[in-house]
Image 1 (cartoon, rainbow over the protein chains, first blue to last red):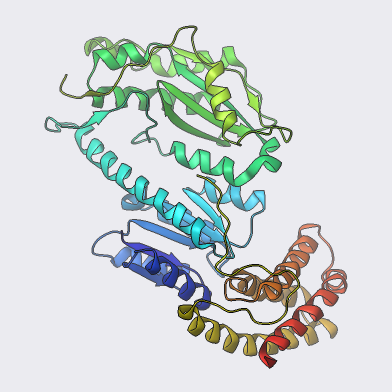
Image 2: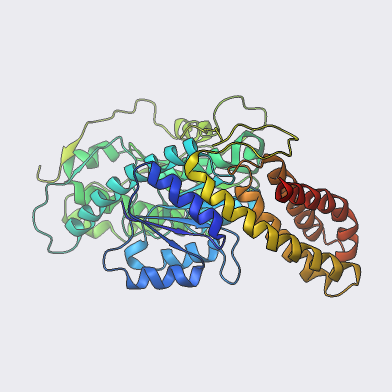
Length: 317
Length: 127
């Protein structure tokens, strides 16, 4: 895995470099500033597979750098791990909103770094798979071998404001129980997702998810949300605690946007997605379970009475 | 993702003496101490700026930035107490700014912690 680590402290960079190498990551490049990092990204013959960014740097800070990196087409989905001594919620929010995948705090902890880099490696593999999917869902793509697991989370291609489900979980874990009270979550279930899955190929199914994600984001009328596809026809939306949903209005807005695609769905003989909006679940400081539990709870409230989960299927069905 | 916490060196709250570090870290530790020499001098200059009321807000920001750098690596390199004090200094400055406190008022609060921190850094250099 080709890694770029950015920090304005040379001692920390040396320490990080040494620790990464001791964990088997031999291909690590370092940069002492955001400008140097952007130059390295622009001139790299082969793109970096992972970026580790310090937040607090002079001139362009790590959050701004993260935003700039996400603006580069080739780095839209590259795992970005923020590293900093600061762990205040605003920094965490800023980092994830800017597109960070994960967040770890200084002082550097060898085992934690190893665990996070393991996660990054898995994400990297998943992103490689998604890149293949994007090529295959492009117009005039040749017959692909790609497979979609109905139950598995998916980063929806082409929806800029969609987050990796793992990033959403990482965000909640970073907030921890104590700061969980500041967020809420609700889910939107595509009631007939399994039917659509069974009647279409993988590419058409993913395109349908993209249509629904776009409709949800348009319907919410706010950018202060984090949306992710959790698998099984379920989208989860993370919101600020004071967010309120007008379920009827949101459902109407989503239907309106999806209505624009109706003729295409009819022509392709694909059932129109029917959505079901769950209840808003708020985080609690009294919760003794893991912070990601609110995602599960949100999904539970959006389920129809008897939900079925078909297995994996291929595109060329 | 399971939160994992195990420092490269064992924590020993309140300890000033240098702790043993893995052999590969010795070179980085030496570099850190070289930089500490320079940074102590910078801290002293910034202190004088604050005492003379010369661009106090800027001086405080630079103090926080320098302390931030030390907080990020000190514990890993065998200096947990210096790391904690650095984090305390940074936090005190940032909290003052976040609360909209005038720079000199923040300085009054930060000053004792900074003194303690500088004493700790100097003791590392004496070892």
